[in-house]
Length: 277
Image 1: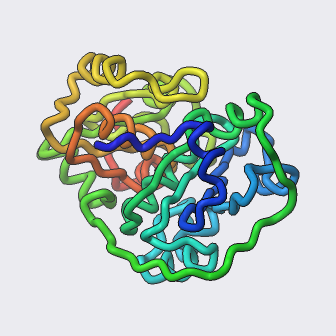
Image 2: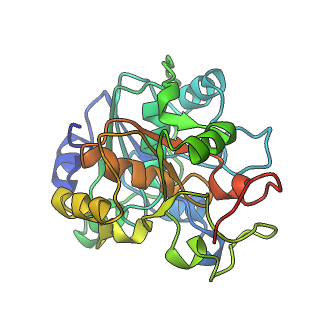
């Protein structure tokens, strides 16, 4: 794949480009006790629009931040001033945590040029670059969706692939959650993992808020016996870090990668879903 990352130097030089839109895609686990929108209002990269992962979502389901319909996404993205043919740069205030979910969402909906800021907000701030406070409102735009169904799978598909092994399943949750040695952070979910899945914790993919070099990622996937030439489904707790794993796999050369959007919140909450420890 083409390099999905841009440097802070590149972004600083292109902030005034008329066809560029910068998105703060920060999101945090409840245990982090961080309010991403409040942090955005307190200070963000100049011109950045806040992309609320929980709001730009299917609100008709109890599952968190599920993909909205293409029509709903077009309406919500357009209201934020995002067009599918713009150069879109996404960042988060962890470094590389939730930005890949926004990257994946935009790519799935047909955006043609989506990049992630390498090092994210922490690197930008460490370099003492400009920060502005308050909300940013862009003129409404037209986002013409071109939904790519190959990038996302549902419960039934994952259940079938778990049985017929026509695709590999990789879980980005921490090892303790994968083995049920650590309880799930969301109430009411069983511990364990999807039968036949392998564990690739998202924390093993990054260092200092940046994605590890491709050679290291490939070695990591080889250790887990993931064949990059065969289809792979990524999962996690709620479909967020599964996007980071999908990004790492695509960087490593995998060409058939789909995210299980419902992930463990759906699977672990369904009594009809088989679970391994």
